[in-house]
Length: 294
Length: 336
Image (tube, rainbow over all chains, first blue to last red; front, side, top):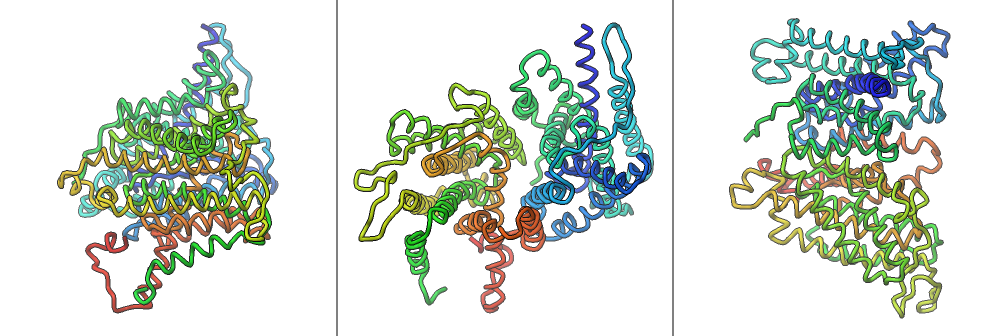
């Protein structure tokens, strides 16, 4: 029982970080119909911005802020301005070519980090470090609890922002029906830009939280991107709470399988889950089905 | 193009392909082999993607299935001529099994399912040591012996010395030409036209009485079988296969070939595969920066010409010959 609790909690903690990346994914999909195959690399990159900033002699908190600002600019603004916007503007560029472009972007970022920073895994500072608590005999690490609290806190804030503020509601309107939103006076372009910035910020936060586990390595994004992707689909591609549920579910399942069933096929669990969900409930666990447009 | 008939170009192309490896070393022969193999895989994907409009990210895993079936059979003494059709058939069946559930639902789902499938295949290949040799893979697959033409040994033909690798190239070339002819026939057949109809307007196609689900599934399974054919060639050419050489990134590479070349164009995958396989050789002097430059170029290409290199080509042709204006209301159809 003690072990179960331990595995469950650390699963939830990693799962909540997956959820951050997955939520960014769904936001981009809703607001801009962009499937971002570089999402994993978006999580990998900010950690290196932190390392570079710290290499320049900045203390950790300042380095984190600098990295956040740079990531939001590069992965949010530049990504939209240089890649997504021109492709969306052309008639045929929105679908498959955009997918290919984001795949290439993933390779570009990965190889760029490898060449210009190094192929070796770099040690990375923990955001929250601490001992562990004893809860009913289970050893619960403070770091896990802090990660869970931070990510869930951010998700709650984001939901409040989207539901309770004027800008948030305008963003939702843009996602649901851009034409009508425009007629009603919403600056849809600005709202889409906000979505990209929020996605970049979420990916950055996920990067800060998860990199201490994996160490900072150029190839981190491959697995993370796939997981974010699967979490988003499993939960429901058009729902924030769906992506959250998907992320948590995968984190827990992954840990449970590794502990109780098989470590060899651990990586297969999210994939099998994905296939089962697509067959059984293609709109995702919490999703609502999108009507077919004629 | 009207002055010189199309078949003349193709004939010149084939003659050039036949002459290409003569007098060259093993390295050139192997590069050309891998170009032909990847072209076959990419043409299969082009059928799924360019004609039927479904994104598959599992072409690498179908190559893996084809390569492992061929390797296991030829290592146990079965002739390649028997092993190859079995590999193709195996991939066709697996393609049906994977595609059937995925195509029950619309949209990007085939992409997601195939992505997961590719990763699963690599995991199984790595973990089931007893069958696949685990992460050490399989090696020393025999090269086929066609009695008068034994690809496993050196010989001379009309006083031209031919190495084993050059012979393998001719085997690849022969398979490629037969495959290309079959593909061409398929695309011009009622099925091929139905595939195009699916891509252009699935709802219209359905209203005209086409069973869209069955046709998409068929296109996907045939595309997968082509992946198996490419795999059946990989096994004797490379003579060493291991799970990682068929990982997701290779499926992405094949997808890149199709899109860079121009999806939906018959010759697109050949061009795309040439670029993806040969460009690293030309960019060798850039050393580690190759992938950065390459991925950067792909992004720029996608931003400025979403229809790939063939699209750039036809744009230039259109600019040179201003008199022929394609009907704008059926642009996609006019390209084909």
